[in-house]
Amino acid sequence: MKDILQAFNLKQPYCNISTGQKDWVGTSGKTATIHSPVDNAVIGSIALADVESYDAVVAKANEAFPIWKALPAPQRGEIVRQFGDALRKEKENLGKLVSYEMGKSLQEGYGEVQEMIDICDFAVGLSRQLYGLQMHSERPNHRMFEQWHPLGTVGIISAFNFPVAVWAWNAALSWVCGNVCIWKPSEKTPFSALACQEIFKTVLKANDLPEGISNAIIGDSDIGRRMAADQNIALVSATGSTRMGKSVAETVGKRLGKSILELGGNNAIIVTEEADLNAAVPAIVFGAVGTAGQRCTSTRRLIVHKNQYQDLLAKLTSAYKQLQIGNPLDEKNHVGPLIDTNAVNAYLKTIEEAQKQGGKLAYGNEVLAGDAYTSGCYVAPTIIEANIDMPIVKHETFAPILYIFAYESFEEAIAIQNNVPQGLSSAVFTLNMQQAEKFLSNAGSDCGIANVNIGTSGAEIGGAFGGEKETGGGRESGSDSWKAYMRRQTCTVNYGKDAPLAQGIVFNL
Ligand code: UN1
Image 1 (cartoon, rainbow, N blue to C red):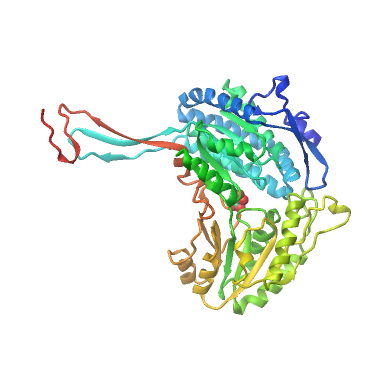
Image 2 (cartoon, rainbow, N blue to C red):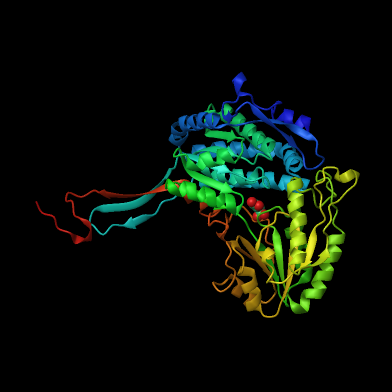
């Protein structure tokens, strides 16, 4: 890993403001030591930002904004294209670093970098498509239209589970829209974030553009709170827990700033009597155990028709037995560690509580021990037979725990699916077209993402990503999500000789 850190120019301890380097990264002089959940080895120490250095970074970003926004959008797109190309070259190193620092499987680490590359491609095209509409004016010789302008400095708060991709969804769109960015990555995965910054800095330097277009602040939640309260930050895009999102929404709302919130999920898959179980089983297993159950889109609940229940449970249990758990950099392993021992404790507590509430353990409930698991963060993916009266099934625990329920009518299945506070992702497995369409209708799933014969996780970047209810209502990534990163201006031009008023009002002098 040392080679990779060196390849990204990440010296130890990374970034020291007293030596005057890297003024796009805030630091207080305090450092934190980052351990990998893979083997508990020290990856490095990292300088933490304090509030003064936060202010210095904001000033740097604000300075860069007029230069960046003055470039035509397609030229900004060209810079993002170069970033995408640089990521293609760095995919292997960056994917490995993400996998080692966060603990997700190497394939998923590469997958994350691929998502970054894809969103860059998307943003390059978008840079020529920031369209406004034109309307017919009610007045003669008048033209009315709308156009979109950059917002200013965008704050991006991202979570440990996607150390790089979620930032890229926000940053690539922000940049082509003409904004500059300040990124507060999770303090659990700072090196992946700083590697991304280094890659983008190289592109900026080659194009003689100011570094302040892209900034990073590594620090605790005080920095996030400061960002939310700061009038300088036109938009705060925050990914993380519902608790964090509520606090960001309240603080940003008080100053009438803009926010995009991508918060907790409690995603379900409905498996009907007419589902093809051969297609359903791999999707369920990947959804539930992929990223060790630490995606906001992870499958947490399985709602199964009573006639399929025993068969599916047996198939799942046998699939779980075949899962290889271990070092995520070893490609034979499907499941890596949880992020830290706090997450392991949350896993154990949740299973214990679920059993107290009447859940029946069908598989798992084990912290793995032995030479391959020295970090103490590896757990067995777990299946619990549950019922809808158990309060715990309404909570999101970031761990590979799957609750399974039996249902009788399809309406009941939809009601169970919707009966949680979160509303991110959902799926139905069925070959019955009426059920599939019902699930997608307004009497169906209440989530931001609704899939048919596809699992809940692994959304493509081309669609708008986000969810309803306690998931926060924000949309990121594809479709027209870009509109949240710009301000809309409605313009009316009078090219006649008279000055008629709207609504037919006559105002003669
Ligand atoms: C997240 O977990 O915050 O749909 C994002 C997915 C990924 C993104 C997840 N493309 O699973």
